Each structure stands twice: as structure tokens, then as C-alpha cells.
Length: 445
Image 1 (cartoon, rainbow, N blue to C red):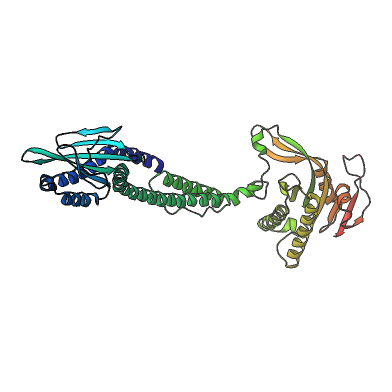
Image 2: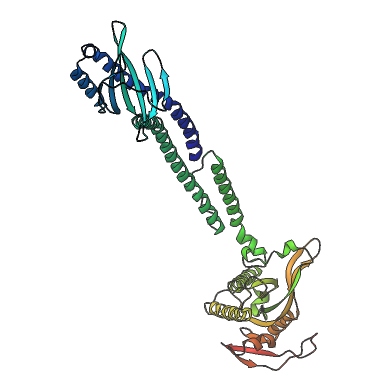
């Protein structure tokens, strides 16, 4: 914008400067012509009286003016009567060699020539008139450098007169641009901060000041988006109760949008926590109390599984099936599954000591192996789930253990044997298995 401004100002300024150059040149010559005319008027009487002293004095006084190189006074016969350049008095005046006529008028003649030093000289000739008769001529030599300097000084003065207001306007435009840019930067920064806050989950953040322009429209759109997302997130805990994942943001790599045929094999660890039996209160307690206790137990189990990087694949009655290694948290899935099992056992044991209404006869089974994870269901209902022998093995382990115990299968024990103390148990034949199931009772880390 500033470049366009200076171009728009500079072109007219250059045009005006060139236009004024001729006017300044003519004005400078006119001032010197006035001086020559003044000398011609003043030497009329001394020239008639052939008073050489007064003629020389008049010539010297005129030559003292700025820019004057010489003053020469001639009589009617073109004989030099006075000269400031030490020219011989009484000698006939000769025309300038190689001179160029600049102007010839009734007032006088102006000739441009170069002197012996190569300098440009303007010779202004004015007639000395007495009673309407020409009795002589006054020649005033003016330096071309002086005229050029006067013209340049006039141009500079004109440019300053023209450009100073333009520069003030440009400075005002720069200030407005800086203030406007700073204001836009501030408003843009507010939009960026809001977007970052929303990306980090801070949906309470709002853009307080919105104006009636494009940036204001963006701010209103962001505020509206945050409000809608906030409404959605307020319902998130309720949604998570129906989802198998501990939180919406831990969902897998978009399996539901990949079609019903989506499936993948992964090495995982499986944790199944199940109640061996309900005990004497299972059949006699109030159904409402049993459901409350069961829900509290399942809530604790799903929370612990989620905090250790697993997800709840399914809930089968009183059994909670947790998978480690399929979700976004895949590293050290066997260790995380074991830590989740230990914490779950400790939490339930502590709750039992406090006589809370929680099942105290929960057995936990851990296995490791390959499962097939994908979209399982029909055209009317699809769920993301996992199937495999490891899940069957973990479910069988809780039938072999006692309440409050953690049972390990061979697959997960082989990966953790350097970190755990166990009690090997007699292999058990499981229905549907070709070989007896090796199992271990976990003692401590």
C-alpha cells in the first residue's frame, strides 16, 4: 500500500518538478536582467560625460552581486569604457565565439557561451538610452553554475513544499496500518487461543468480543461450536456408560467407519473378573441391593481397566472382560493387565473390610494370546468386539480359582515369569480344549 502511495505521489512530483524547471530558469534570468537594466539606467550620465571613474565604480558595484562574473560598459561605437575583468579600456568589444542566442527582444539580448575555462556564461546585454537614443550597451555576465544552483534550490524547495504534506499523510497511513495490524493480530490471536482451548478440551472458553465483520463471524462460529460441543460433552458420561470403552477419546482407529468387514489380529492380554457365586445373600437379598452392589463392582472394574490402558470389551452378567493391547495403549500390555488385576483385587478387598456393599468373592483370570478384533454383528446392530482362545482361557481360569485370587494362564505367565511369584497348579482339562489348561495362582510381584 505504501509503495503504491509513493508511486502515486512520486510521478506527479517529478512531472511538476520538470515543469517548473523552465519557469525557475526564466525567473532567475529575469532577476539578472533587472540588475542589467538598473546598471544601464545608472550609467547614462557618466557615459555621456565620459566619466571613466564613475563608470568603473558602477561596474564594480554591479559585479558584487551573487552570480555576476563581469560587468562591461560600451559606448555607442562598441568601445569598452569600463570592465570589471581587467579588459583594456578603449578597445573595441568583440562578439563571443561559439555563442548561442537564448533570447533577443526589445529589452536586450541574451547569449550563452563557454569561457576559456570551459564554464557556461550567460551574457545579458542592455542598451543605455538617453533621449530615445542608444548611447551605449551594458553587458552583464552571469555564471551558468549560479543559475543551475538557483534552479535546483527552487526545485528542492518546491519538492519539500509538495512532499512534506505527502510524507505526513504517509506517516498517518503507516500509523493507521500499524494500529490496524496490531488490532487484527490481537483479534486473530484470540481466535487462535480459542481454537487451541477447544482442541485441549476447554469448552468453557469463549470469545467475549465479537464485531460485525469477518473475524467477528469466525468468533461467533467458534462460540457456537463450543456451545454445541459442550452440550455433547455434558452427555458424554452417560454415553460412556453404554459404550465398551472407558472414554470416547480412547476409541480405536475409527473401526466403525471402515465397514462391517473390518477386522485385525493382535497380540493382547485378557483380563476377566467374575463373581464365583453370590453366597447366601445372592438369592435372599433385595434385588435392588444386589443390582446396586453389582453396578458398583462393575464400575470399579471398568474404571481400573481404563486407567491401565485397557478397554472393556463386554460385560457378561457379572463378568467384566477387559482387553489390553487393542486400543491406542499397546505397549507392555501384559504388565498393565497384571497391574490392573492387582489393583482391582486390592480395591475390592479394602471395600470388603469397610463392610461396603460390594462382592468379596471376585476371581480374576489373566491370559495372553492372539485375538481377532473387528465389527461383529448384523446389518441392524454392529459392535466392535474381540474373539479368540485367549478370551475362553481367561474365562476358564476364573472357574478354577477361588474368590479373591488372580489366576494366570501359561501364555501370560511365560511373559511375566521374571517379575512375579506364583504357585503352579495342576493342569485342568477344559471342555472343548485339546490339552489340559496350565494355570498358576498369582502370589505377588
